[in-house]
Length: 359
Image 1 (cartoon, rainbow, N blue to C red):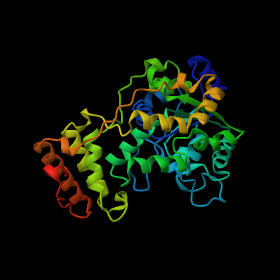
Image 2 (cartoon, one colour; image 1 turned 180 degrees about the vertical axis):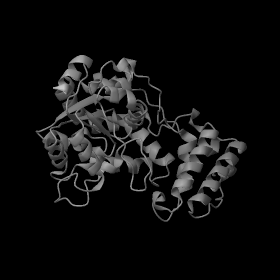
Image 3 (tube, one colour; image 1 turned 30 degrees about the vertical axis):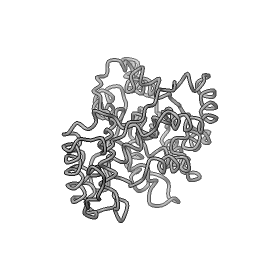
């Protein structure tokens, strides 16, 4: 009775909805998560909770990536152990919307019944589940994703290899990563055009979709995850070259990655963005996903894919050491050698090349 009176007096939406922001990577998730975390108090006034979920080492994250793990025992009810336990406790005591966000939700529930266990948990506490996923045009999507894994020194892989790996794994194919959500009849799914949301204001688009009253009043401070630049990607490739294992597995990866970020941000290497595709390659990638994209556009938007994501002119932009000045090559070499030493990888050796073109 009291809660009903509060709802009538305040006009707050207290629906028991568990929102799963699926991502995926490079669809504005960093900006959305930063907005949710920064405005947690404002959300709370409207009955929303964006919970804190620390990693096993106690570090507080902006997102909920620990929840990509469904717990130690698949036989036990979700929430009885592992990182979902705190979410189960929250759902048991809360009486309003709960928002969870991690890019890892895009791949975490591909095993049979995995997503069903999340819906079971929600239903045990009187919640329904609604997922939100943003989709975008694949050439720019793949380019942005590849540049990110390079700047983070995650994997020594060429762009072509990454594109093929992404196709095999369904990383940018909505029909692949959204299949668990489409197959689960007890929940709803919002599919959102990234390009349209950017035009409208990404963070406020998300807040409106979860039903937050007056999302236009929420202060938004851009927390973008920008293109690191052509020089940065080249340097990352040189740093990771000949590494005996995946760089992210090396013991000093975190400190090396921080030092690398400090270096390229201090040198303003992002001024010239990295674009690994020329127009013909971008068109070929777009054609590869065209059939699925059109089905998606028709089903969720009653539009064509071109209307959702107009093709943009693509001009390749990569760092060419042969065209660099001696000072630029020295700058590149200094950064590469410093970070390789921190990474603990094989010491960079000078390879003879015309005009000393290689770092």
